[in-house]
Length: 334
Image (cartoon, rainbow, N blue to C red):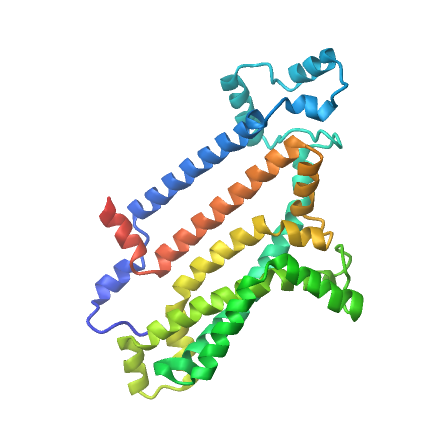
């Protein structure tokens, strides 16, 4: 149990740990509205593409009769409201259409690629957090009250440089050095557990540096708080002081960053997946866009968006349970 700030009543602290009904209702409503907007946007994607998607799919020499027949088969000659109603029904049944190129069900393409993308993003997020939080706390303790200016300058310079480098450059460098040069890891594909090492490192280096900077700022703020001064006055052992009291109180911002990081890595791993020929959705997304395979591109956008909304929703609930201010502020707003 962490030390509470002096003067905080026990009943208020207990209340703060409870997710209020208004907090839950507000976030459920926000999630439902965002999901609705995502469905509308993914449906509108096909209709907003310049030109005729079927003409692009079948080629400029395709006879008009074939195009009209295909349009009727896909239901594209119905009114927009009817098409949207059919689209919603198909989505909720798990029918995401058929690939223009491979004639494979899009749901099967998603089912084959999504687990590999999720595994990559989850591992990268875990590695980034495991490295960043201790590193940020160490940097804060070392530089507290203006101590060790050299450490502070080195920490800022190194983490800033690491954040500035794009993930695909890390991927290329790791492949050249550790796959092609030293032959320590496979250069591409998913053939063994070792295949995860380089893609995970490429995705986690920049985010780890960014979160370490946030963790350092949060730790410095907590180190100056009343409960930490009280804990230090009691001369608690360093392990208990930092792990039991300091760490839990610095995790709120880190949890928020971790949720945003996971969402970003799921949707932003496209280039890294292509560098490593990773059998995930990123590789299929690029193929779908270059080959004008619109049903696959539409489904990937929908799935990515739904995952981002779900992750953010879970993070909001976690913050409401951990952060003393979130659930209360939600209740007061309403």
